[in-house]
View 1 (cartoon, rainbow, N blue to C red):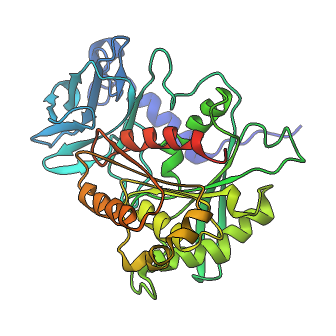
View 2 (cartoon, rainbow, N blue to C red):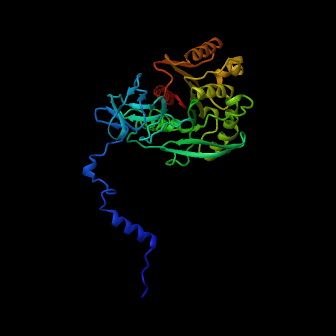
View 3 (tube, rainbow, N blue to C red):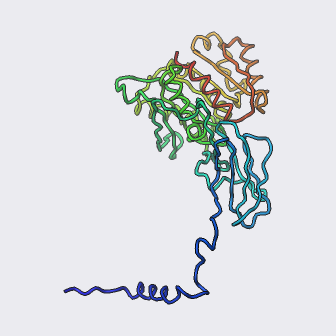
Length: 376
């Protein structure tokens, strides 16, 4: 009969634990003696839309929470177990950015896994669904799929990433081809931001379910194409254009069932991505018949000289040139100058001057307004 052997190390630890269990110097206090554990849940959303934020920061002297829903940061108070907290609200339904400032240092909420994708992440996401649900809320409708791709960009000589949304009917209709929206983010963000924070996939799902938008494939690239050490010809927009035209479009059209013609392609974006979209789209109307910019870093006259030099040809090719900006956006003057340029040359366009600043609540609304216009 085989004997059982006991590992000496385990045995010594077990004996030591038994010998010291009753020692006053090492005994741990009971749960009752410790009292109720202080919650560190953050954010905690109540039914009345009041929200409590918490952060454990033992050595901090000042902690505030700054949120997109309010112009003023809310001071947090230090309580038991070194947990700082504050309750604010009620906060209106929406998708909001917020961050903590700990002794002047801006940081994400470590208790919240919802982080806005950025080049330098520093804001967390608070989503409060509407009643009834808002257009960018998750609703009980058929949903599409968001695909993540890593690819080698031959034009740039390095690995890059992109996200592709396919509509709910994509897998249900294997013989159907779909139009494509190339949708770009702004300078602080990346290829994931339009989904994770912009909720573009839910906006499209809901509009398609309502019969307001045509099913479409949406391609979201990383807009930061230029190497930081050397921008190369055309700077970041030039590098992005090479990657888009030489690498991404061929990849998308080989990998997805999309219609490969200008009438079924749109390029649109916000801020930096709006500048990229307007510059590239208006210089390649043979590839993009639909062009849009949200709060754009609008191109200069020289950057679209070809468009301005032949307005009749541009009008014949363009299905829609759609430009929008908020009244309190710091890029408003630049957009107004660009609109004046288009008007002066007689180039057809739609101009939307709205309420709002340079922020995602405005841009979600622009996507919701643009999408039903596309590919009609």
